[in-house]
Length: 287
Image: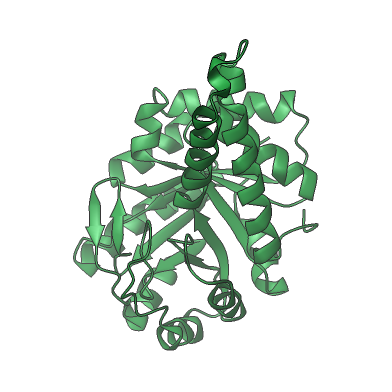
């Protein structure tokens, strides 16, 4: 059964570790992440962007696949199904479809409008027992066509949004989506520290977890980050393993063209990436 992310993140914040949000794109992705979480006895958050939701035929399809998989694979660790970077309309559609957690990204609106829309969604989520993430200060890089430069959020604005009753807060601290450029300045721990001081026990979210050095990840966790989003890294490991399989000509041997065989190395590679991240985040054995 899907659960809200509130309990797992409250425990993570108190225990100084982080729960990974791993974005899903299809059946292989979902299966690889769930099996790894179960094997490592780790709580997990499955992230779905609006683009991935469309790709998988809509949010109801996603909910149907994930809930059935929890049952068929005997998954007993806590699993939240979370809308990633949701629009106002997208958030409402996911609540309707049966997601257990949503993110409303109002960071591109003026702060007043971000507050107003977040407030309305908080009321709906509270009533239905869902967790809700909000964002202040856009995260850099590209996420489904939305491009940001990796700016740092204003700690006072963070407090305004945190005080609305959200479960977790994503704040820009110089992090970006996708691969990090060579001239990246690194995370602003000064900003993170200032935000943490104003938001207290609220779990903070680090977007763009791919490519941030391990020591920076650990420092961010020590400063209150309790949820870290990983997407690109799983895509890259899937791509690399699939390329190797085809370049080695294995798709031409016997029934190597069978999609179950063709996609198996990539699926294994996702498992490996998820395992490395869960170990780094400290969530292993915390279910």
